[in-house]
Length: 354
Image 1 (tube, one colour):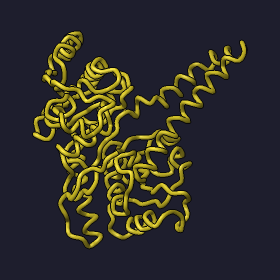
Image 2: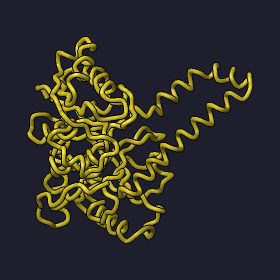
Image 3: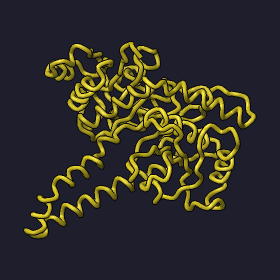
Image 4: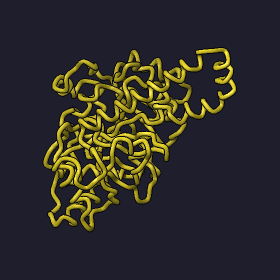
């Protein structure tokens, strides 16, 4: 793409907004010189922060938004002020094709509800799914759904598998990513009828992805597959468990090196290795959840991230635009319908509530 990519930013969303949003945009500006930014929020708070960044003001403008969606707001409350809030106006700019993508670190449920109403779903998509990266011993994998749809049927899981495969190909650069359904066992007879029906469909000839089969929770970190597909309830629990376990073991290691003088010396001697480990497992590198299936690029940054983490979320949104991910999703879902002997259908629903 040669034209500038316009990134709409919810300037007031997140635990450390607006500072983190502005500083993150400045970092992203250096990495993505073909991007420009539109910050929605309070000019009195945003403009002085932008002015402190030497180059950001040349590729950024601030648009006033009277309201803010708070972490305590219910999705219904966010919808009521979608035309006046920083989150709603940022999403609205994508819906009106004034911006190419939107990034927010605000309330997840509110973001999904507002984006679902303002953007709608792509042709052939029944429900949008929240996808993100998880670190593995082999690199990183894509996992979805992570909370957008608490209950899913077999058709939903099949759609998620196709969208996740396209996402892995486009963003991770994998030629033929493997896809697995998260289950209580890898054997074919395990799991619910929904999972078995979805697996049967994904094994059919002509389905546009490389289906591995069932995977277990322990296979996620092992990198057995490139894309892990599940319902939003299971996916959210699995993701929070992974995050909690990582924090637990980090704490264990930190305490272990404080137990004696010899242990402290050992930590100093191994500091180089620990720095590499810290960088490899840095959660900021995996910041950015994507609502796949929406008719517009919408990325959710972790609310508590810092500027670097927010910059990674912006980068993910820009990459999705560059690689025309949504066009590829529509094409692959059309191929799926043909493989199943079904006529292509238009979007017949919106994203489910978290």
